[in-house]
Length: 220
Image (tube, rainbow, N blue to C red; front, side, top):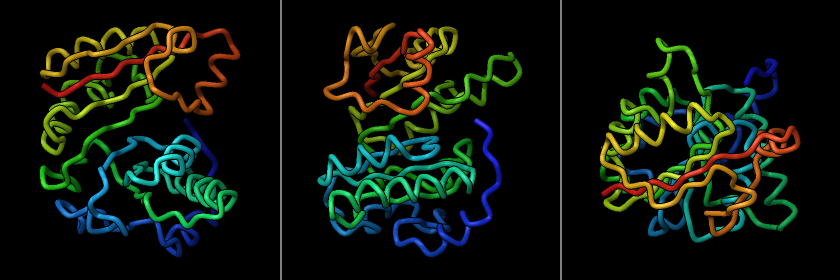
């Protein structure tokens, strides 16, 4: 998703208490970055404008979240969305951290010591052209990287509007030793999540009559 440059984003992020500008320094010790380090630790990859992570983190104060994106403008909007959600609840955002990083190189900022229990991947770029498919966040190349920092029995929650990406992802997960424990080709008619937080893209696609595909994959 393209977004216009926002000159305010970088200064606001650098001034934020819940933005980390040097994530490489926290590899293997992310839990120490949070006020309650004993909480479970989960990720959102490609957090975009932060509508999802802001609601998820607020509703689960007993879980620590790291949300990653590569675009300052996106992260700036995510920062503002987190602030707004927490402000309305009169709570300080102490269980969520935003950071800027290239997810293709994610193993430079996370390892087994971080004990990640769940990854959320929502409406990632489908990269439909053959030579670009290795860039998919659910591609086998990426899944093998995630396995290096996931806990045993960790889960990946995945949502997409793209039929081909979904079918390919089912194979990617199986090829890399994940078990598909839940899947649906129409999430809004067949819920598989305990609670589904609708993203901006999800709402847009649903209004266009496009069904939302989703799965839960578990690391064996």
